[in-house]
Length: 446
Image 1 (cartoon, rainbow, N blue to C red):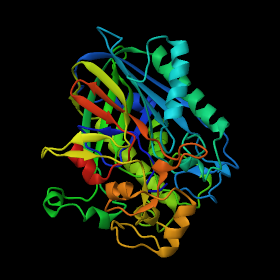
Image 2 (cartoon, one colour):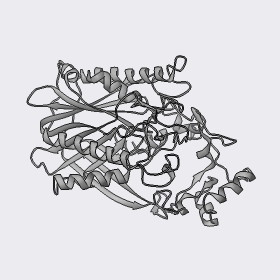
Image 3 (cartoon, rainbow, N blue to C red):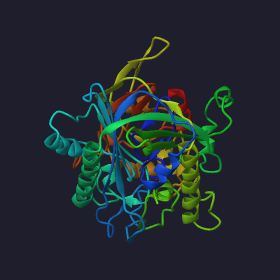
Image 4 (cartoon, rainbow, N blue to C red):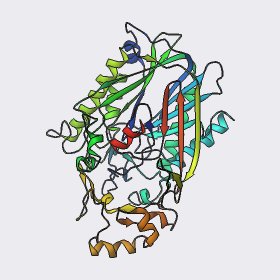
């Protein structure tokens, strides 16, 4: 879904909105980049990296991201991968975190449970929900059918077991490789400003943020490229990196039917040897935009890998909890209490974004409870239960189009219980949240 897909990672210190991590297990090219003049010397950790193939069926399978029934896979351009990053304290290896990055639209609780079950068989008591996180690059050019709730399964015409199995099995292989090559090393982090590579997908919505808050920032989308480098103590070279940049995985258009990892994977492919209309190469083709965005990230990574970065030092901590979001209550700073609602999709959801507008008469930014098109008011009642007055009040001013939080047939359309995690490695803190944040929401969390 071009502006609604679930994304599962946000870095608190890095402050990303629409945060899609780029990652690589780096071989010779990274070793060459390791010949830098100055090396970071932080606390020594145990580090492991691994990669696994998660490519499942690629033809006659609906693709995940644009929610378009006609976007059915017809071929393969790049195989999809899982990349595992393992960090443990050298003094106490039980204190560890495992981050798995998938060349998929998003992670999923079913995928996570499947991976954890198999890791428990392989390494009893070592990996659990509290120290393992999966995230997707949010590429809109991979296969669908692996998510467990009904809503994202509609366009994939149900659950596809072969896709699910390929993702789980390939992720486990990546972890096995990372676990096997766990060795002493150090971490360091740095960032740079990367221009002409991303753009805000809904500028009109961004203007709804308070003017005084917008005045604090030069751009209407994050331009910061951040890289976490993994250095191997024994060889004195770099064994991998995990990079973060706020670019949406829609470089390739909705009419693309070739499985590909998009711009971030293009950049990784260069290292180891986006946008739709308005992308940097749109006058040539969407693949040209994909190439430019990937190349820019590749060049930014090369520059940082060859630089002196800030050493990461300190303990490793992790925490995890399941939260029932429907009817969840919490205190506000002003002393009042706020309450969340069961899930609902508004008319603005169907309006899409500037680079991916919705169909019919739906428009973005529709955030008024005024009377909507009577036709859709009738049609929506045939799709999901009518919202109660309490639900309308709770969701206001958003007008409800699909009342998915009350749709349970044949099973839940949307999740009511979600997982939240936090990883800490020294001064680096990552919030792992099953959400897709706006630019300003990410900045506020930072």
